[in-house]
Image (tube, rainbow, N blue to C red):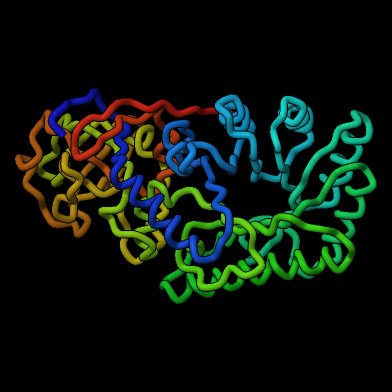
Length: 374
């Protein structure tokens, strides 16, 4: 990469991006399931178009801002993957009235009652997936709970269609081995299939049985009973995924470009202009076997430099030093030198930036914008 950009800025290696997407597609192809990628990681039209041969397809979003943006760009089949809040009912209704095939998610009786009341009052139809808790990670209804049927019956009485169930194997991110990821994948599939069976036995016809996490999607061995897979970070990967063994460091498609602005030689520190405002505060690798600090330091070709990491970060300053604590001569990274920092969490780091400088074969291909906000 010969062109110098003002820093800090976000780089995207499109060759790695395409390879990562192909890997997921090849993995899922034998199972004959739909890939409904989660676009919260990239928040970019150009990136999302690369998921689909025709440029458009079903997507998962984490904000209604994303739903608005991608619907305006021609994406109509959209799953809003966060449990719906009452103050968003009207926004969701507008999208549906404009022609979006928007699916909502909920996991509790209170939200169901409020949505049913809104649907009756406004004569509005909604399509809903019930979220299933497959591992106690965050949210959802236990897969064998009678609450699933109770909520579905309440919604059906108000012209709200329960078209399926969904889950997310969040605990896969805490796995210590590929065998543990594979076990998480079995648990994820079994939970959502059991929940679907419970609803079907109660007389509900389901068209969607949806799972989603990058680790389990890439290492699953059985997707029988599953109709679609949601995953997002696989397109970029990051150091957390590398620490899990899901990818290699050289697969990571995004990095933060930064410039050396000073040194503290007596401490073995090199100071750069990318702090936590550019890298994010995410320290997801701290609980893994290798703590990568705020990110691995690479040269402009994306190759790691020794065992250098960003060991500390202030708002606009990053401190580079050796992971092992050994002294590194500051002169090896002179003032003005540009470096690339591989992120712990691609979603969080990318969210700090307005867009990507896109690279192919080390050359600048162009710039792609991102959306932000809710």
